[in-house]
Amino acid sequence: MKHLILALCGAALLLGCTNDNDSLRQLRQVVQPGKVVVSDPRVERLIETKAPRKQVSFERNDLAGVVALESRRDGIETWLSVDGATLIMQEGMVIGTRGFGGGLMASDVAQSLDAVLSGQGGYTLRFHSFLNGNDETVLRSYKCEVKSLGSNPATILGELVPARQMTETCRSLGQVFVNSYWVAEAGGGIIQSRQWLGDFLGSVTLRDIPQDAF
Image 1 (tube, rainbow, N blue to C red):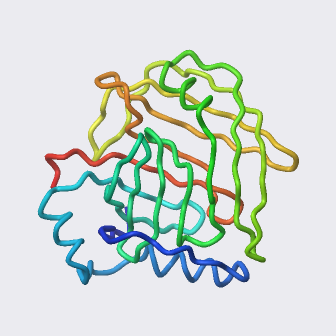
Image 2 (tube, rainbow, N blue to C red):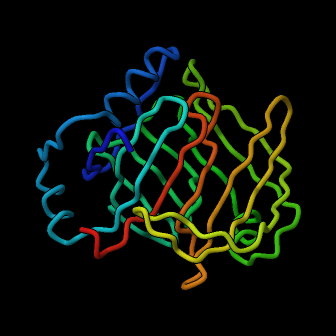
């Protein structure tokens, strides 16, 4: 990836956005090229304890970085960026964001998650709530079809890792998006994915970083 930051800091505050330009500026402040600046003692502790990390790449804006696992509770994980922006995930699926602008506030992905991890596919429903430019919450429901594409290795730090690729095609009024997931043959978890986060952020690519790489 052209740009690399280390994303390791405390919990994020919700950042409202008034227009797309403000949202884009927020995103660039969070995920940007340049030297890592460690300014929070919590960052140092996460580095010392070798917290799990993921590569993150926002396709629409050609911005990329790394997020680190700050907490896990009841199957919900919080992954943090250097400026405190947050990806909230459930077993590898993004269910919310904070601080990136144009926020995905929450999602119910239970049906899709089961279809992907089981490898069986099928028809599912998912539900999203977004924060729009007027700080209003907009609710959307999607009808999705999950399919298995069979064995297709994930690419992790240039290495091929045996995996099964699953696709999820979702439709709502005026919106269609396709998510892809690579489920590891060893362990059965999502180790690489391309997921749609809304009209502003577009799709994000996520890859696990092996523990022995840092």
